[in-house]
Length: 123
Length: 395
Image (cartoon, rainbow over the protein chains, first blue to last red):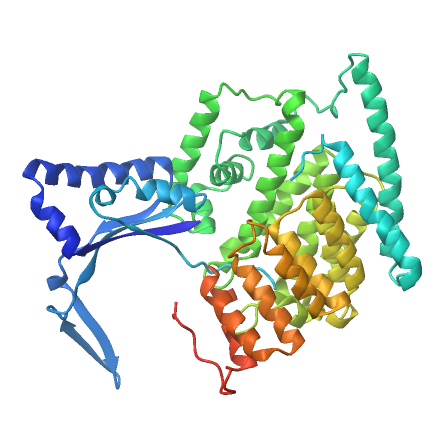
């Protein structure tokens, strides 16, 4: 079963980041690399990425056939997605186990959500 | 699933279900379908034989004699391999991947496409699985007799999982995933050839054939799933149904009864009905009762309640559903909401059905099922009589 582990950046996480030493920040980054490796070795990793700063994002909409790509709203956004791990494992308990290893879980929290699936039983 | 070693409990439970069936049928009239009688008679006979065999085994064990398992040829690699791939140290995901690779001969890429995970992930899973087996000290040989039955149970589960992966696939990767069902059937035939007297292997094969037979009618042109009650049965694979029915009929008459056989019997009863309205629901209800006694579980409970509604009406079924929800395994399960919605709709309580369909749609993880549930919600309308709202989240 597939689960998405979402890592959000928000005021709280930024406040925590501020207080970390350089060494701790490097440890944080290493933690993510090691976890990615561990997930791959365990055969559960489907995809995992860190995302660029929201200022580099574009918001895309289509109106009357015209594509509009604009810079994102800045001031109002309280939270944005910083990264994710998409894993395929046995069940929610195992997914929670993996989420607990995400460095951010030790400082703030991460979200684990089941992924919808295109299969379906007869009913 | 209760272990088959638990003879007394199994026997008593199944015997009780059969006795109650035997008592009810004279009152409610002889069932039109000969299969109903066959199952009763066959099962009774098997229960007796089982009793005799158990008595014999107990005598033998009392004398210090351990019964020999079905002898298997020493050069029977594929059976050994199947058993090895279902090693208890492995997660089910690993068992599936390893079985597909080692016994099925599928490439890592093919497995990856079928399971919808990256090739590297599958490769790792398989390497780790092999390593784990080595670390456990397992060798390329049959497990010791004491473990063989448990391992065989695991093999059957793996094969059923592979079948399910292929069968429940819809849209997108359907083609690759449909091949998984064919592969599962092929591997199960292989297992059956090695163990022709194993009733549960035969039951599993019959179940797969009878389920896969419905595949051509499962998806509509717009690729949404078609419920069993609405399927165009002329598109069902008649040859597969014939084979499945013949197999389960023969098996019920010659083997101790088990969960896969019961599931196959249920599938046979469904598949034999030329129209949905011809479905022999009383028999299905009996079979689910027996399945619940042998191998209880949330899905069995829910399916039994659906059958109960067909036989005794939705009000009684709703009461049973309320009772069933006391079981922790069922609480909050999205299927409970879906079944409740279905029953409420049958009762004519449309506003409550509408709400229940929406709840079920929110809780399911299956996109096709979500579409179906939202469509039902719209069909029964919102409380104020206006057509239902659109999907809460578009995929």
